[in-house]
Every structure is written in structure tokens, then in C-alpha cells.
Length: 501
Image 1 (spheres, rainbow, N blue to C red):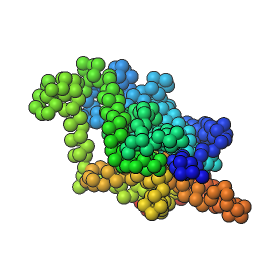
Image 2 (tube, helix red, strand yellow):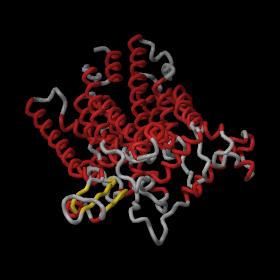
Image 3 (spheres, one colour):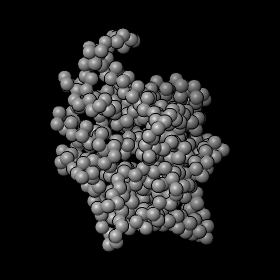
Image 4 (cartoon, rainbow, N blue to C red):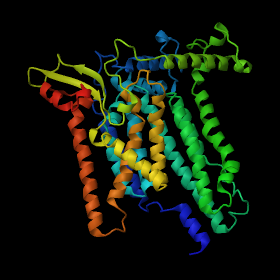
């Protein structure tokens, strides 16, 4: 094999599976199955027909969007402190089904089902295995945190959806860039410049930028993923240039790729984010729409139009709200948690509890909805993270690096202000990347198709045993994930740890 052929093989890596139709059928079937699971009895529970927990903020705000045609005009005790995208998506469901549980949860369930479709395709691309892609879909269906958040009129599922979508787009961009470089290797002009060739317009990276803008338009914590993905894509470009035989790959990435990456992964998300405020800009009565005129300030942004100045000041007030949303020394929220508890789900959330009006065939019955990650998955998060870091650093495995970096991007920023009030539902974006980490490990346990019959059979047995354990664990948790009526003894048996009470 010639040097050029070796470089091309190294660039492309293991090819995608040839069973394209089966791959899509598996993804579609699991998405439909997951959608059915998410939609089951979606309108329950409610608080006497009203939203539960933090739905009480976002559901009426979404109704305002629907009533006003795209903006909020009620300051709501100054709790209009999140961008509009998630609330607009909740409003779509309310438009379809009305102001009820189905209405304010429908698009969350739809997002949850689409995440199952995406994770099957993403895991298949990461592992080059349709089987492992299907396993990823099963694991996400059976994740308790993803299940419950897909059935709540809150914003976190939309953030998780757009982050996963951006991640998938970047994987496609990575493969496309390497295919373009492989073509230059094949034609023999990859090293005509010591910086390597220009890579052309990258539609998948553009799509990732759009998705990141929508993530930030759902919750501001999307900005952490903008930074992480922007850095990751430039590193991928540099390593691709090196694999292609470019004489100065890192300088080439600096010269050729950084400016387009800043455009695609910073400017595009910013423009999309601003566009999500279209209703606010077009209105005259939206919350703080004319703040710069009513409360004038001077600063670097004085040259901006009045509407942008108002949005900047409004955003400053929102940032101040979040920075000062601290845990009180007295009367703490009973279900507050800190980020070191999230990887293993040590402090879940109780969204709903009824211990007096439900019946189950016995004198004392309980109906409760608890946000808890499936322990068979979440209790392995730290070993999976440790193994992923080893593969990332010790073996330079880019797949583990992509998953670990994204997982840590969703977790580590919350350690910057530990006085802030925090809750387990902030971990929603972590779930999909925990699943991807587990699937990468399961892929190693399964072994490559070239392994012997006995090795492959043993690996398949261990993988099947683990997936069965996850499914069984999810089935066991089902009553407290969906608010089913159970006996008090059954309720006590569901609470495995003292910190779950």
C-alpha cells in the first residue's frame, strides 16, 4: 500500500456499516417505541389541573407567547429569566392541545423521542455498529431522568435536544472534512501548501452553529457548549490535516480553520440567538422592551440601536438574578442538590406527591413522580468517566474525547458558584452523553467482528445481560417515574438510598 493510500485509510478510518436501511429502521422503530413510552398518560400528574413544580413558571409564560403572538408581557415577579425558545416550543403544544398537561408537555415528549432517534444514529456513527446504535437507543429510552424530563413542561429537555443535535452535526462534519481531505490525498495535491487545502463551506458545521444558537435560546447554559464545541472542531481539523500529511497541520488549522470556525461556531450561534428574540423585538409591550429608555445607562454598547441596548440591559438583569439565586442559610429547598451529586443521581427531585387521595387496593397508597436517573446507568458514570479519560489521554481515542469533553462541559461549569441554588434537572444534558460513554465501553466488551466465536459470544452475553439489567431497573422505577398509584410499602421499596427521601 502506497504512502498516499495509507494516509487516506488513516483519514477515513473504519467505514460506516453498509446496512443503511436497517440502520434507519432500527432508529425509527426505537424512536416510535420511545415516543410511545414518553407519551403514555402524558397529561398526569397535575396540581388540580395546574402545572407542577417549575412548570408553574414556564407553562403560563408559554401561554403568554401564544396569546401575544411571540412575546411575554407580564414580568411575573421578575422571573422572566430565560430566553424564549423553550417556552415557544411549549406554546406549540398548548396551541395544539390547549392549556392542559398534554398541551404543555407534548413538545417535550416529542423532543425526547427525537433524541432517541438521534442517539441511535450518533452512536452508530461513533462505533460503526448498527447493533451498538440500537443499544444506545434502548439505554436512552430506559433512562429515568430523560424519561421524566421528556414529560415535563420545563426547558431543560430542549437544551439537551439542541446540544445533542449539534454534537451529531459535528460528527457528520468531521467525516465530511476527512472525506474532502482524502480526495486531495488521492489526487496528490494535499501538500501543495504547507498549511494544506482550504476545506470549503461546511454545511454540517453551519447546522451545528444554528443548533447551538437554539440551545442558548432555550437556556443560557448552552453557551458552555458553544465554547467546547468550537475548540473541539478546530482540534479535529488540525488532526485531520496531520493525518492527511499536511506539512504544518497545526499552523494550517490556525491559518485555514480558526476564522471559519469562529464564524460557524460563534457568530452563527449569536445571530441565531438574537433571532430567537424576534417577537420581543417586534413588540412594544414585551418585558423590558424599552428598558434602555426607561432606565438609561452608559457603556460600550451606546452605539447599538435602542432595542439591542434594551436587550443587553435586560440580559444583565437576568444574569444578576441567576448569580444571586443562592441557597438560603435557612429554609433551604428540600430537594436542592449540588453538582457533585449529579453523576450518580444521589439527590433526585420529587415533582409530585399524593399520599391521601389515591387508591391502590390497600388503606395507604402513594402516587408520586420522582426525577431519578436509572441507577444501573448512572451509578456507573464515574467508572465510565475514568475509563473515558484514560482512553482520551492514554490512547488518544477521539471518540471518548468527544463524549467526555461534552459530558464535562455540562457538569463542570456548575462548580464555579456552589452557593447558587441547583437541582438535579440541570443534569438533563448529561444523560445522552452518559449513554454514549456506556455504549463505547460496551463496544469494547463486545469486541470487533473479527474476534473469534468464543470471545465474541462472551462479549455479546455480557452486553445483553447489562442491557437487560437496565431495562429491568427502568421497569422497576416505572411507578415513581409516572406517578402510578402504589402501596406505601412499594413506595418505600422504590427509595433505594437515604438521600432519595
